[in-house]
Length: 409
Image (cartoon, rainbow, N blue to C red; front, side):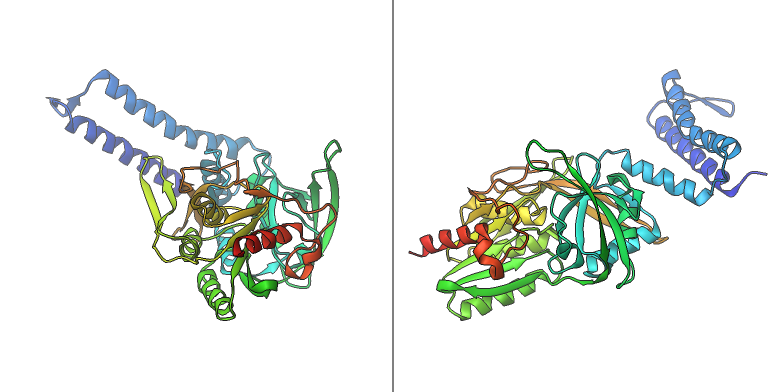
């Protein structure tokens, strides 16, 4: 007795072949012979090839079920096929997610979840790479750094193609522990370090904007991510600093892994004058431009970045750098210059797919390259904490303040 799944696949094949046949026949002279239609040999061979390609899936599935030593779950098989379909692109950002994985992914983007508080991305070496720890979370307090590779979670090995599974395992009930194994690049000439860290999970609540007034009426705004509320929070904090007599501004994008492209562009619009903020381009060479109006901040500006600044952070810093509206300080950014779309399917599963790449106003695509600051400043070795509260050891912030002061004069 034929299974429902085979019947469905068979029906799809029939529809596919029928559709192709209809297309072929409708675009050529039809030669009817009794109840048959004659088509060229080349078209027949094309149809046969299509059938062979799609029927191979059924054949191999039957072989797997009959001869594989263990039991095979049909739903797991189907999910594996879908995951393979997306991963075959070779793009680590194009991923199919099961219902549980998609739910976990969307929960993370909402800004409240139980976990250790790190942003990760697939590395070029197919290892799970820390983009940045989230400020004031267990991950940051445990000393996790941008560039660290998470190679195991609870003793189970993971690579970047299984990143969603690793993230799911790292999340959990606040108050519970999780052990991760980290590989950290050693100093020049030395080998990498591999070590375990056991971290207690907490409820992670992301506050993406913090602001304060520094000496000489220089404002400081730190943006940790670009989510739905970031723009409104940024504008509110910017106006509060202006009301206090701000004469210059430092924006800190260090360890900001990105987020929503349009939010980053709206913030850029507050800072720079009329012009292109960023443009995206699809494989069909279709371009979409995000523009700013004439209104701008009009104050001395410096933006601090590091290797943990990615995606939307690079959009903002790239726009400011290309238009010379401010000075970029720090170290070369992460280098993520592609844009994804997210789609939920009717059964609760979903996917994210890379649909375009973005370019700075001067046409730079920084995928895998990053943005090199106008003024390169390293953080001294051994310094774990940065920011206004740690100004004495934060050489990058010191340099940004110096640059803004110089422009004020």
